[in-house]
Image (cartoon, rainbow, N blue to C red; front, side, top):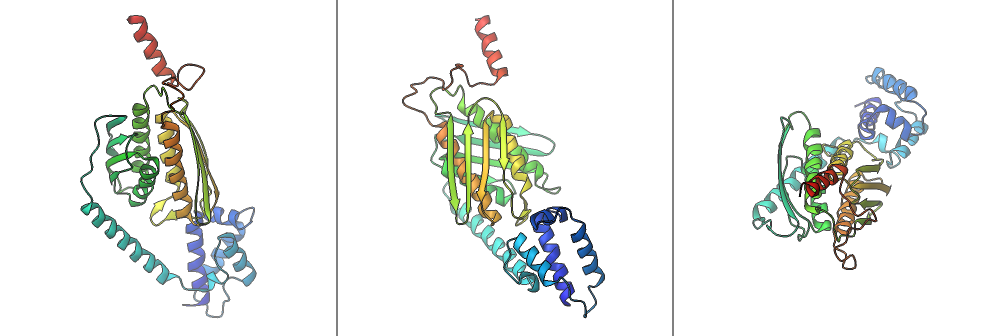
Amino acid sequence: MTITQLHLANFLQLVEEAGSLTKLARKCGYDNAASLSQLKRRLEEQAEDEKARGIRPSLAAKLEAGMHKRKGWLNRDHSKDKEKAAAAEAARQERAAQAAAAAPAFHMPAEGRAVSITRNTSETQITLSLNLDGTGQYRFDTGVPFLEHMLAQVARHGMIDLDITCKGDLHIDDHHTVEDIGIVLGQALKQALGSKAGIRRYGHAYVPLDEALSRVVIDLSGRPGLVYNIDFTRALIGRFDVDLFEEFFHGVVNHSMMTLHIDNLSGHNAHHQAETVFKAFGRALRMAAEYDPRMAGQTPSTKGTLSDESVAVEQEEAQSEA
């Protein structure tokens, strides 16, 4: 392999991690991607030329710094790193499958704030059971392992029992599965919360994981609103497209009728960034959904309701008919 071929392979890996050539340019301090497009074209043209020098050291340092790589990263062969990562991921999935097979039977209580919802479309068929007053047990069968890993954080840190089965069109991609699970989770949260009388309503959490730190703030307001500030350092975590997290939270917010602010405050490991967000979401949701003994069953709003307008209209019509 020539030095130019090595630089080209590593440059394309940086483009993949950044999400696009434009995003890579932005991360490395360029106003537009024209110069990097020219670089890519030059490397492709000179790939077979053993005398070509590849990427000059000053530009290599800029690319490495912009993507948080160690000095000299572009000059190393990382093909075996991918093989090791793939083998480690396969081993992790095997351990998870073995643990799931050995786990005790999942039991969803019929009492408390527990609901089950089934939603079938031409793209996904989902059954979700949720207990807000649970112990943090969970069981997932969705075909999207990394999403399941994140949902496990919500269940455990939110002390929510969560059971999700989804058969989706994964032969296309994960988009419909991830988005629709968010929608059904939002529907279940709304149904389980009911009138929200006596709850704290607001919840917040800061969660660190090594270099990463995220803040999540929730208002179970009856009004959907998402403020989402996560600048992931790469586009893929394993095979999972990080853009789908925003689609997931849009589904949750729009169907639970909550206001949700998500801010990743620091982090350069994308796995850590995502995990801190989901752990913080679980803890903030737990706080917001908890009963407040001082509230004594009152609705935590001076308006007297935290229901969305359609529910309020239905309640008013029912009262007038009575």
